[in-house]
Picture 1 (cartoon, rainbow, N blue to C red):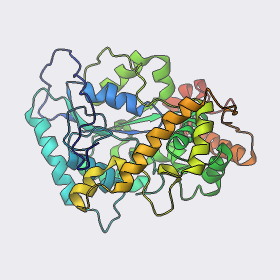
Picture 2: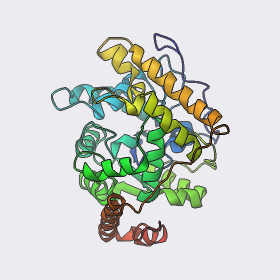
Picture 3: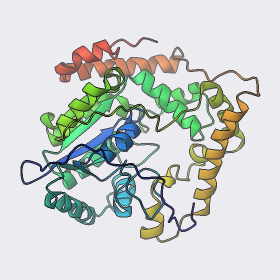
Picture 4: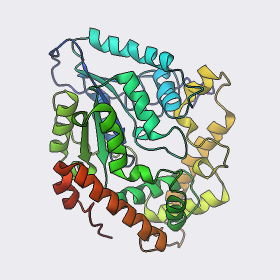
Length: 376
């Protein structure tokens, strides 16, 4: 990794090779995939949206070579910065709406001029929840509407909350969180008024985007659908954003998780050597996502701490895998029967019932995939 942040993020994936064809209509469609986290976002970004030759996909998942450190795949450093910093973190005093809209306007015009581009848009799971602070989801949605306009296709992919929270906890541990599952559940319940818990009440987030963009412009898909029938899922997604379906299996593991035993080891390392999600209150936890903010906007260069933190996390994840065959340790436990867990389960079931009432077309799948009566 270059000190100046000039090293590219890796090999470039080829675009999908279906024959190109001109779009119908003057304007390409606009889309925003808002998440959820741990719901195949990385696979869709890198495996489909970023490779589809009918899209001008601005990120995440754009695989063009970059001249800056780019972990997540944005078309340019300026788009990286406005998505990862302006849209996610800048408060009203710091946010410059005209400047941000001006940056996007260049790419919207580029897409319009290229008749082979059928749709232009973004993908970022942080648009549906606030990851350890940042701008409220409602404000993010308002900013997206101001940039993209009414009629933009919103894609929202949900996942049964039990599985979602389990996977998110594991991701936290992989990224440095030192607490056990009960610590994580307690945090979610006790501080639900200031963390992301209510944002996992799908009816609340869906209502925000439906009110702003129109019910007809918010496509809600299930992660479980993708696992069950990837082809059908991608056909529905492709139709929603106005592109041809490409026969692509999302079977590559883009965001590989540690095993439960390896995560138990990693949690011990997190306790002994705090890093990333185990850092102090006034530290930024995901600063590897927005290097252009440091280098271009505040012009401080990439902080040394970012390099240390990034390398420590990757080394400890590798070390956890190596130690798993040597040490006698029980795998991490995911217990949903504690008092706080039961309260959380009840909150989500009630939310899903309301979600079903407001979106009756989803009820069959909500029942089928156990959203209305969790199986623990």
